[in-house]
Image (cartoon, rainbow, N blue to C red; front, side, top):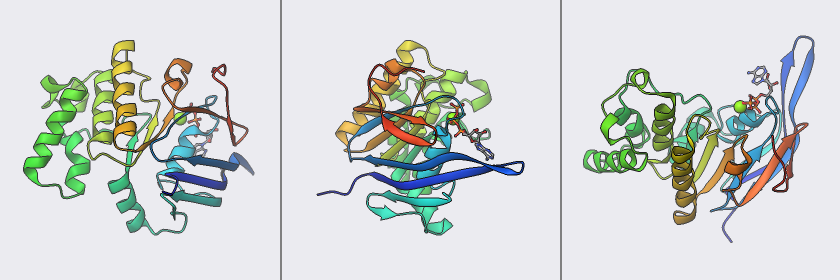
Length: 232
Ligand SMILES: Nc1ncnc2c1ncn2[C@@H]1O[C@H](COP(=O)(O)OP(=O)(O)OP(=O)(O)O)[C@@H](O)[C@H]1O
Ligand SMILES: [Mg+2]
């Protein structure tokens, strides 16, 4: 049996707020199988981005354990975490995080550069992704020259270009019109299916959440299965 893509056990994370602690995650539990796509709903401030940052190893939990492909990352040192992110994880941030001094093409190539991909293969893969997100004509533009929706598509192409085993996407369709949003969701769920990679997708839209195999809600620091009727 393959290990689950993600296992969270008893995960807690608080932030200091003046003299008290604000507990954002409170003994949260989660298991995502390989090839499974999971949508995460929850009110603004409920801790969705915090959860994604913990799974990606960008932030550290106060308590509990995070396993990626069966391997505990909770006690990994920074260099090992960096390698894990670079090789196995794709992250679409809530606020794009594109590098302003790099063109569209260079931003998308970044994960391949970091993984020392051969030049010819890199050019091919970047071109494929540019076409997939319908940005072939904007390959040499810089982020500030792109619309919000175009920047979002660059961020999605960058997150998928190295075919990560786990894709974490924080409101990836928030800035897209319906057609572009559908396109991007199609891309992400196809990748999950074809490559047996897993997807954790934060969204406020129930229509978007329905693309996933399963919908979870984050409330009061805990994750629970939620029916298709939940909406935020
Ligand atoms: N670095 C930080 N320091 C202090 N408090 C933080 C920090 N990051 C997040 N918080 C707090 O933790 C809570 C959860 O934040 P988070 O960004 O995870 O919410 P979210 O569910 O992603 O919200 P949204 O839907 O608005 O993006 C919020 O109350 C926020 O103010
Ligand atoms: Mg957020």
